[in-house]
Image (cartoon, rainbow, N blue to C red; front, side, top):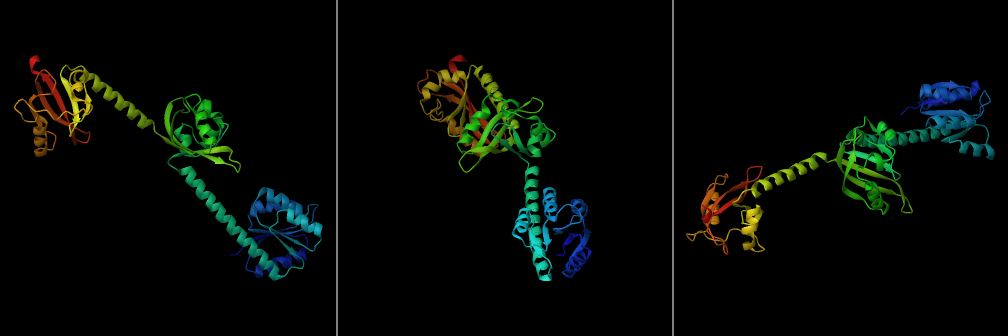
Length: 373
């Protein structure tokens, strides 16, 4: 691949010869400057692939100092050209950061080797940049929140998803505003210190659930995977977090608990004995009346299926037979149910208990002593 080359040389004959050799090798000379003060501006304007830098230039700036100044600004391969071979000069050239060195008079073979080194260098740097861009893109565009945090409690980096999760415009605003995660992010006092103590032991934390503040003060629930970045001595200065917003799940769990509590309170208010069993007869839910009068008679197994009706048949088996014939959830059975140890025969109805998806998963027993009727 042809390189775009800038030549920094104050002697016309040397510059012309160098330009000729470069073009003979199939490369392009995009500019020639003679003063060290012009090099940085030319590089930033022309964006060469390589700079061929003579040690002696037209102004007070040497090619060595020009190389040092240039490499502080941009990462471009510089090959120094000089007639000198003194150990002191060679040492200064090596310390300047130059990629290569060519001694005058320059041969085409020497130029070819140095430009090949520069090409290889540029290929490596391009691959590194591409890799960095890829990883940065994965970091920035991940659907989950990702951050890097110093152990003292301030963010070092964040992706867009995490900043938006907490209500910030972007990572820049998050890093600028949040200076103490203990006070500004974690809603429970001491929560980050708990996590930090685990991380300091070198442990990764998975599914660590915490309540955190959003930018507007709202509370969110998050689940974090935290990993310490340990140094050679086992200590760490920062750690990395991958975060999922689980607020909807937590609200759904709270709603289910509330709904269950309402159902439980409702059935507790019923004077009849009410119990929900699975299809093997194991009691999985019951009301207060059932727990007081019937549950003590069932023993530790808490199974409600083995007692016969007054006519000797088993009412639960009759219900299962109807359910087998009609699995759509319409099966019902009624009869006089007898529980060993209970003083009265129970007028009992059994109906289907279905899941939210409509699948029959159990049975609902409603029992009333005949003496109450």
